[in-house]
Amino acid sequence: MARVEGDAFGDRELARVFMAATVAEARRAEALLTERGVDYVVRAEPLGRSLFGSLRMGAAFYVEVQQAQYCGSLLVAEGFGLGVLIDPES
Image (cartoon, rainbow, N blue to C red; front, side, top):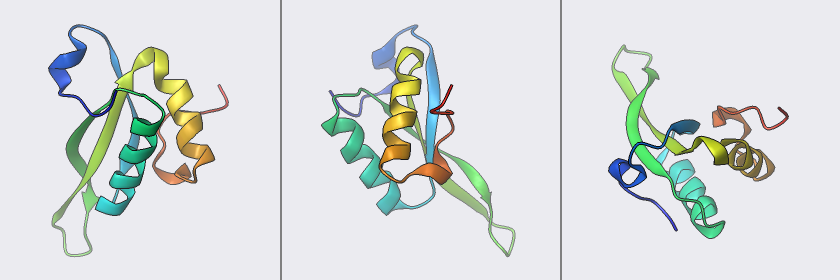
């Protein structure tokens, strides 16, 4: 289990669980999810704008909705708190 293409999930609903702002952060998140046996999709998405107004892109991580809470908790436990989009407490 690891990074897969979006169509690998078929019609199953996905949840965005993490937004990496840097390549290093994305690689760490990929290693963690792969190590834990989670299938996930990564998509480049707008993250914001730079000081000069150019668009910044980030790596958005999607997992099946049923795994979103688990993945959010994993990511927070590994120090990814800022980019985690799922509340690990709920």
